[in-house]
Amino acid sequence: MKTKLITSLAATMATFVISANAAVINVNIRNTGSPTTTTNPGYGLWGEGAKTWNVSQSSSGTDLVDSNNIDTTVDYAFTVWGNGNGNGSWGSDVLTNNGRYGANDNTTVHTLTLSQLNAGMDYELIFYFADNFPNQTMTAQGAGPDTFGESKITTGGTTYTEGDTGVFHYFNNVTADGSGDITVLASGAGYETITGFQLRAIPEPTTTALLGLGGLALILRRRK
Image 1 (cartoon, helix red, strand yellow):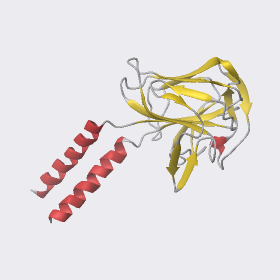
Image 2: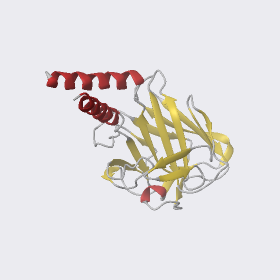
Image 3: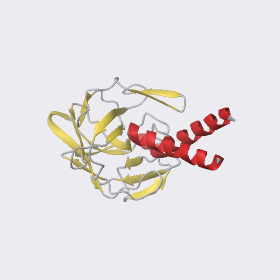
Image 4: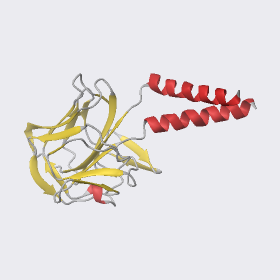
C-alpha cells in the first residue's frame, strides 16, 4: 500500500509539473500571408507541431495565443530589422524556411522586444533562422551573448546543435524585467533571416513544490 501511495504521488507531481510547463508561445515568421493561427506549421525543437502557432509576416504582433490556443497578453516587435525574405531551409518542416527580418551589418543593433510577460519570471527562448550565418551574435537581456555552437537541445531522440544540425539561437533563464519585457539584440555580418521563435516560462521551484504538495493532499484525502 505504501508503494502504491508513493507511485501515485510521483505520478501526480509529474502531471502537475508537466502542466505548469506545457504552454509555449509559438511564432512562425513568414514572408507572405496575413496574420493567422494554425496547427502544425512547423514542429520546432520543443515538439509543438500538433499545437497552435501564431503565423505572421508582420514586424509586430499583439495578444499572441499559446500552444493550447489560449489568448495571452504577450506582444512582440522587431525594430531596425531589414525586410529581406529568406527561402533557405535546413530542416524538414516549414518552420525552417520562408522567413523574414534579417540583419547584415556589424554596426547596427537590431532589436526584438517581447512584452506583457510576467515581471521577474524566467523564460526559455529559441530563435530559428532560414540560413546558417555563424557571424551573427545575439544577446538576450540578462543572459549574455549567444553565438552558434554553444547550445545543444535534445528532443525526440535527436540532438540539435546551433549552426550545425539546426540553425537556431537558444537562451535559458532569461528574466523579464520590471515592466515584463525581454529584449533581444542582434548584430553581425550575414543576412540571417528569422523564421520563428518559441517562448516558454520556467516554473519557479516553489510553485512546483506547492503543486506537488497539493497533489499529495488530494491523494491523502481520497484515502481517508
